[in-house]
Image (cartoon, rainbow, N blue to C red; front, side):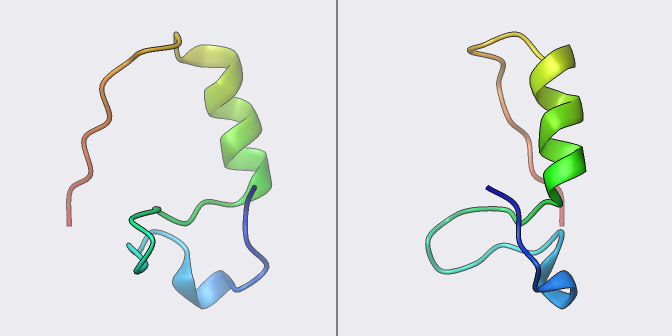
Length: 42
């Protein structure tokens, strides 16, 4: 799920998650195949 804490979007948090907005998650879900590698650049 996305976050309403917009100042944290695009940053890594202690749980290892990268914060995204809900609309970005929905967009990625429709375009990216399951099992695709994830690369996070800082």
